[in-house]
Length: 153
Image (tube, rainbow, N blue to C red):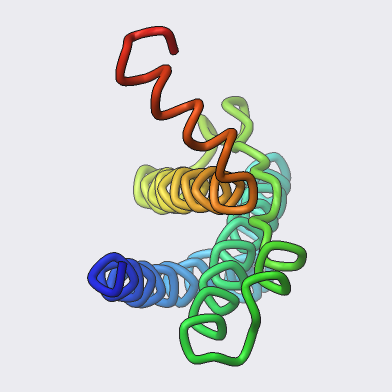
């Protein structure tokens, strides 16, 4: 179990570093002050940038919040119960294909990177919650493992 925790901590740290890098990149890409001051960007593109910028930064902030809660738990600053109650990952709001068509390839790539990161963290969150629910109800967890072993699941 201690090895699992160490692996989980390392995964959280790696994802945290990736999320910070994506947050910084998103800030730079979606900073519209320069573009709007020049006034040479079509309105549709500026609107698409605003919408997808908000979705992207919100997505990254949800991931960062989840990772910070994980780090706090590993540091002993949150109990398991606090983590379960308040450490949920924010809902994903995928990009709009019509908006994506208006954006530059590098911007679309960044958005897709944040969507993939959110999906990875979502899988970790779901896996962790599944393991935690089995720990809370050991009988149900044992029944599930028996069913899997005999191919009934």
